[in-house]
Image (cartoon, rainbow, N blue to C red; front, top):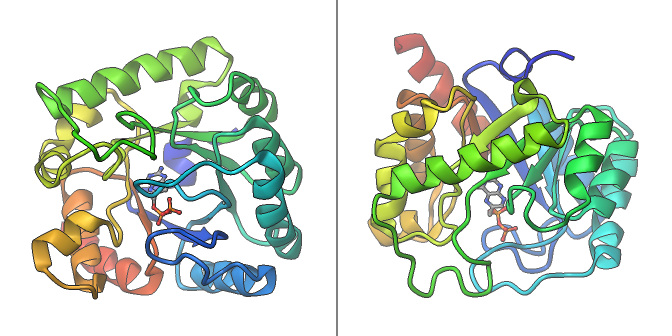
Length: 266
Ligand code: HH2
């Protein structure tokens, strides 16, 4: 198994394909599996290292969906892709992860950091897949109600450290794991900005860091604009410059171009 840091050198881009009716930025766009698969292929051609396919929205206020519903959304997309391009599955359900891994997915992206489904750790351990552990305070339905921290960077890092220990104890090698502060998941604008500003606190855990700031509401609040392309690219570059390895984005081509230039200067 190639360590995650070699398979996804810094900077790498994860392209987002939400196969949902209600995701906050691209809800409904990719509900047709042919359109979703074509979008995924396009992102790969545009330079994404991997494409993250998700069948459940985790936007603030979202209610969960059943495993059956989620499978019905993502499996047709994975079947159309047929393992042609590297795919990550954005799920917290063991059953959905298993189905995706059987269809060629190589990374499991779990926004609950293995707290959502007691069987997911075993599925990841047995498959040899890569794993992204993300921080969230609360749960999507209520997480933006009143997020509170003493020191947000220290608390997020402590949580991810503990979840990584849990994953390793379940048989998932540390070199298969990356960590994500979970921008927008139970965080105010200032919490999100501070997490990127102080990314070194997370980097001190010694694992590659993923940042997903793309099209999030903090960017809308900062710019007062609904067109979040420039804001999203700026956030990706800022996160890269503070040490992020993987940037999770909806607009792959402009982000890849920006990171190419930022990387060349660095
Ligand atoms: N953000 C979202 C979903 N999954 N996974 C990781 N690792 N990091 C993130 O920041 C992250 C994530 C939310 O964004 P999006 O997929 O665009 O929306 P939705 O959850 O509404 O489908």
